Length: 99
Image (tube, rainbow, N blue to C red; front, side, top):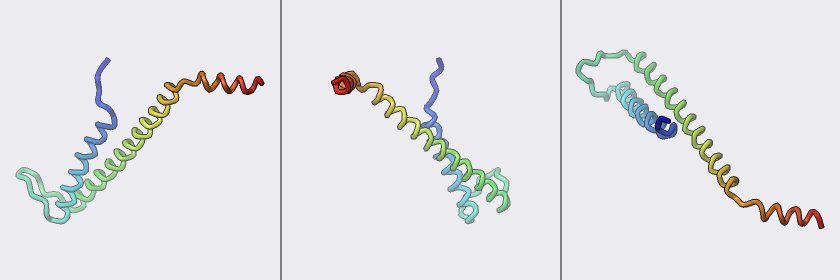
């Protein structure tokens, strides 16, 4: 069985990367971005297109994170129910119904 990272951890890492990319793109659009040697100059429309793609990916990752958190919350609730000892409850419930 392969050991893989938790989807939530992966999504958080990717979210951090895309947030940094978004900040860099916004800085370039404002004209504050540092030009890197070897990087071609992009037009404003190309930068805005990239920014839109990054923002949509960030939204997808946030939805994925919310789904994973909801899944773990449901798992915790299910585990509490599974570990609870219902035998005394059932005993007194049935005893009360029979009397």
